[in-house]
Length: 178
Image: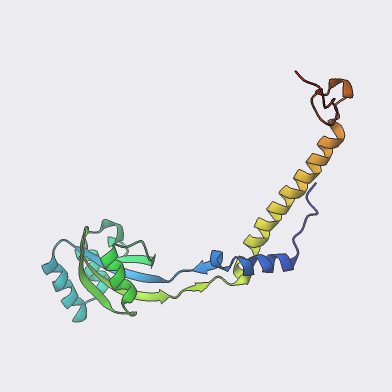
């Protein structure tokens, strides 16, 4: 019934332009960190990093964060709202390669390094075109099917006048009362 339904390219492009906020990519930072139990050890780790020790080696050896230990402290791409506030503010204001910390949070003392930054932006039309087309096509098919179904119901569901409700203004007498 809906196999022949299509969405014109112009409608897909117009949808993308009207809904650009939907395809916004927020700033993200790739962060590596070491979580430590006390400030003294955190300061020692910062000194070791600045003197040339490998961040990943220190993270594997000294972090108390079991979730990032195996990945050498790599937290992956982090967006705002994920990290504790103090750590987040420091990480999102630091340039790539900067050592951040030690910063105390409810989890302990963090020492972090910003590995890379993905700036704010929007997904390219070419990258989201397929998903927009699928969404618009599903909506249009649902609408076309609904119209077809209503037409079929109207054609097949005819109530004989003798079975119609007498108060119905189409079939009944307007003065009828119960």
